[in-house]
Amino acid sequence: MKEADEDLEEEPGKKEGRGQDVMVALDFSGLHEKRCKGYDNPDTADSDYEKWLPHNDGRHRAAGNCFLGRQFEYTRRKQTSECFNGEDFEGLIVSKSCPCTEADYECDVGWEMDKNEFCVKKF
Image 1 (cartoon, helix red, strand yellow):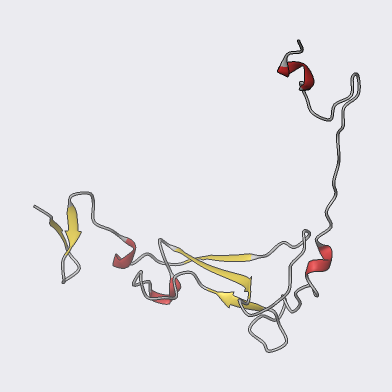
Image 2: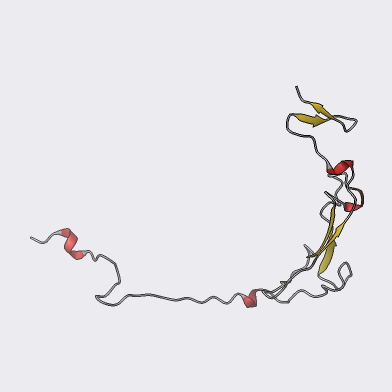
């Protein structure tokens, strides 16, 4: 009588002494119709880029977009632009020093800022 295990191969599809390896190469370059343009003139109608200041939303009370003594300006792709940057793209980040203000300081652990913006003990 034949055992059930005899019909099963240890590695399905493998012939003795030779492997059945497969290499697949995918080219996604045709998925995007165009490369982004206008990096040197952001915020214009014909540019796919815009300038962005990370502390420009008022959450940090940062005067002049200055936060912790630094001001950063990024040039990023517009959300509405249907283009791609490509592998060779390197964006530029402009960084400047600026004076610290009271807004740059936070309360320590166990303390919180009151309505007058002073640190007071939580308990």
